[in-house]
Image 1 (cartoon, rainbow, N blue to C red):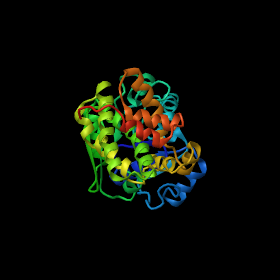
Image 2 (tube, rainbow, N blue to C red):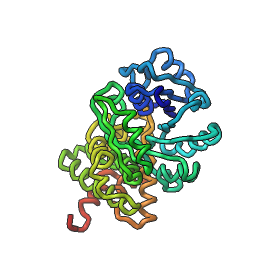
Image 3 (cartoon, rainbow, N blue to C red):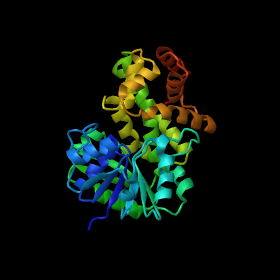
Image 4 (spheres, rainbow, N blue to C red):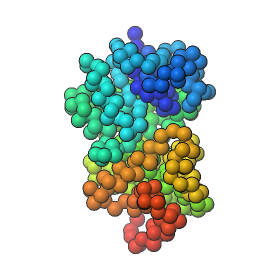
Length: 331
């Protein structure tokens, strides 16, 4: 019998990961809070709202009852927005007598505390529960329909990371493993902020030269932040760093990039957010990364200008001018 995994979160990414685990042969149950959506998924055997072209494998079932989802689950995968992560963990503590293993695909710092997800998990659950983070350059729609994709799974427990990687890998999906949880999480959080910047740049019509400069220098800022928090520099050259950054900055499947495009084309913040129709993680991450950088006294000029556009209504064109007029420094 396959080890059962409970996927908590039925949005596009939670659905895609649940499909992939089931496709790889795991008994999978996906939990969501919207009764009508879960009932529709059970009936249609697909998520018609977010991934209509990705039918559910036979091993995937859905429920709105958290106790049902957790019953007999040897692994739990949390896939909720970063601002709901702590609340979800508290619900787990209330509902589960024992959590054997916990993983998450949540990306972003906690806004109020500046903590990364693994730090929040340690606060809520203690340090004894084996944990892992799943991240990397993967759009939900492409994973859902089975296009070739790759991701990274990071954990302080090498056996747990390897087992998760083996249980999600198929001919069209490959998982790599890492021990650098901090680096993988910093990459996953910061790339969303930079994707907003890339969208703003393209929305202003600045072209490819501007975009690649933003991506390249943004990677340096991501690395600077990660290393200051204890991450390994090499992590940011991999899937969860450069890979995820390039993906989200250059493809309009990225909701963060589309949010930035709307801002660059003159939309106000609320109109731009509403136009996406889903959570724009970079909106929350811009504030959180700004605060963490201030606490660490780090110079992250691109991130800072994106923060000013999003939270201080700074003019996007003037933000670019300020970046271009910064003192010349060695690369």
